[in-house]
Image 1: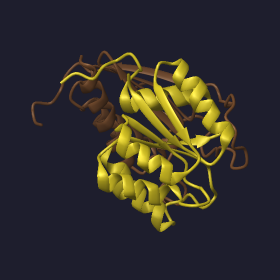
Image 2: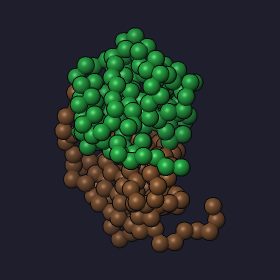
Image 3: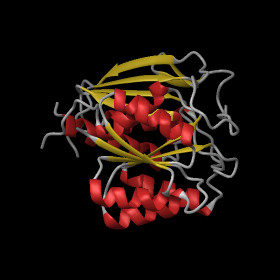
Length: 127
Length: 134
C-alpha cells in the first residue's frame, strides 16, 4: 500500500472517530501496510452526555473495518476490551482524565492496554 | 525531507520538538511567536504544523483559522488539557463538528509520551523517511 493511501486511510478513520465525538487527544491512529493500529483511550470528549456503550463501540469498529484499504484492525485500548466478539468497558480506567497541570513532556503513565486484532475478511459490495 | 513548523510559547516544549523530531528525520522549525510561525508556514510550505492553543499574543484557534484560510495543511494541536475543553464550549464543539471533521486535524494533550508524539505525527504525515506517492 502506498504511503499516501495509508495517510488517507488514517484520515478516514479520524473522521469516523470525530463523528462519534471521540476525544482524539487520547487516541492514536496509524496505518501501515493495510494494518490499522488504534491505541490509547477510546472515550468521548467531556460534555457529551451520551456515554459510549458496547453497541456504539461496535458500530465504530464496524465503520472502521469498512474503510477502503483496511485489511487488519489492531486495537490496543486502555479502557475497552474485546471478548467473545463483543466490546466491553475495561474496569477502573474508563473516564480517566489526563493531568491538566503538567505542561512538560514526559513518560505518560498508562494503564495496561487491552489488545484486539481483527482481520477484514469480507467487505460489503455497496459503497 | 518532511518539514514541520511548531508554534508554542513554552521554550522547553519547542526544544523537545526540535530534538526529538529532528532526530527522527523531520526538518523542524520552532517559534514561540504566532506571527513568525504564520510567516514560516507561508514561506516554508511545511507538511505539518504543531500548534499550542493557549498562547499569550494570539491563541492557537486564531492561528489555525488564519493558516487554514491560506492553505490546507495537517495540523496537530498540542495543548495542556483544560477543564473547559468540553463539548459545552462553543469553540470545542466547533472544532469537532467542523475543523476536525476533515481528518487533517488532530490533537494531543500535554503531558505526552514521545511515542504518542511520534504516532500522532506519523499518523498525519507518515514517517520521516516515507515519501508520499500519488
